[in-house]
Picture (tube, rainbow, N blue to C red):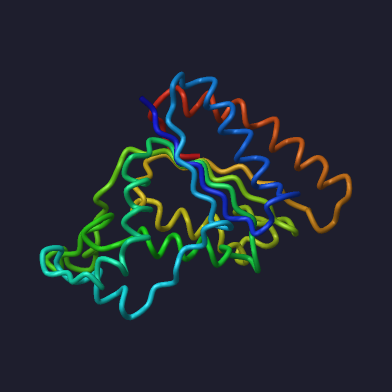
Length: 219
């Protein structure tokens, strides 16, 4: 049975382009995966707590030595990681805020990328001591940005700290396939924006087919 983790990070609960894309893709995946289990994580309605000194101490304490306070500090993280562990496909809808991740999404990343849960740490590996623990997942990243030109070779390539950030840490989420569809020009609201919206929506059925077809290389 396929498990789909559906995450939205937009602060907007209405009029959100990224939510519209993620909801549409999940609907298409329901059609392709009969009986799929959908796990829902809305980072606007249930914002992740920020990492604190208490959280760090708890995360780096061995499980058997954790106190009640340690376990309480890690409770949100444990629940979010359990969802991630179950997921075969992650559908993540997010806007670009100030050229990067919304704070709630960054907080989710910090809660789930955790030592001895999603990565191991061993200095014997030399300059690359971190290694992923999870694997085999597909991530469909659906984004919306007010400006444009964030793709490699485009005019704002070096300003893009959204999908590039998620690609950099995707292995610690267990991601083997990374797919990205994005809407641009939102703040311009002109024909270019309308075309970008139409192209993004038109690309969703093909992406659903690719996710349903099984393992492949990232795009």
